[in-house]
Image (cartoon, rainbow, N blue to C red; front, side):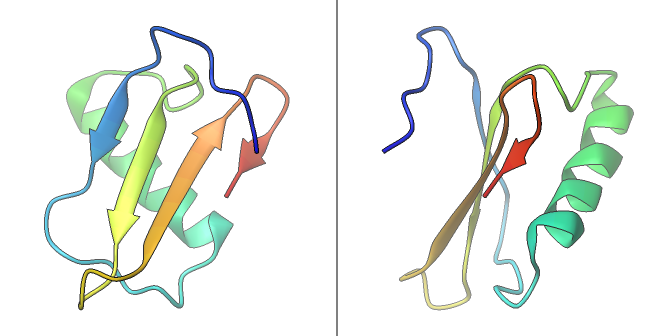
Length: 69
């Protein structure tokens, strides 16, 4: 289990995401959305994506050293 610091923002992706996407594909999606919002994608926030059926979840997090999936 990865400890997440308190005060971290959690961003939920609207709709469903292709669960075949890996860390790079999801990170690119996060980067595009965060640029539109004017935020830094490496700020340490959690980004949550769900599959079409809703039974799978992928979370992308940048901890200051690198991305984690």
